[in-house]
Image (cartoon, rainbow, N blue to C red; front, side, top):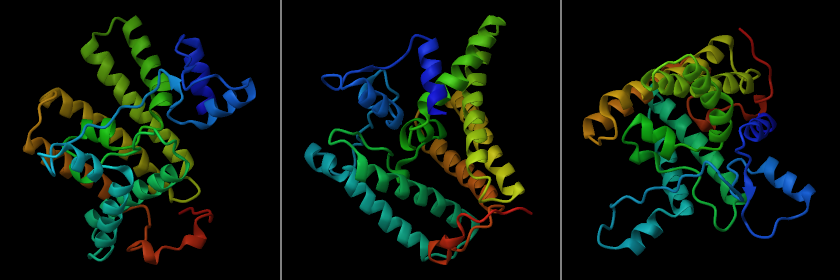
Length: 266
């Protein structure tokens, strides 16, 4: 997927340029290009700097910056994850636990291999206020570039050539990007899940794409507690429905970690 992304960027004259100092040798440059999922050493890149909330510590910028440091947020999310594991593992709790698990695993890797200047990989999960901001600001964007180059841009280009108006072509391109991620996750998780679980993973992403487009169409950029509540309900409902078919244990401590590589088929 990364190679396809690089080829697509070269075809559209959007190939990233190295901007992190003196360019290294071609071999090292190729290695960096292939291993940096967010093209941090290049321009353009899909990185969006996180928005710094006003709370807590509304009168102290220094304290807020310290509070939202990636490592400090890691500790907060780890504590929340442990709390979730102590609760009855009903579907919404289990689904939220899966989101926290993904957050913690990816952030652990990020903290080990990040550059000193790397921006956070995730935003705080507890600050989700809409589906749109969840996918564009809170959740990681390591696959943003291939989604854009391999799904969004081609779909938008084709629909524009077919003279579809922007209010059709842009939402369709967004849903296409989510469908692309659905296909990727279905392929990646195929050895671990049942057929029904894989099917629901696909619909999880497609459903998120459709709901995100619908939410943006209704609310635009307006912030409101009703929008945040609806986003939480929608996300947890989709995640719970997906987790229900994923044959997950009731909590991380009961997981069969040795069986991760077992091939499952029902």
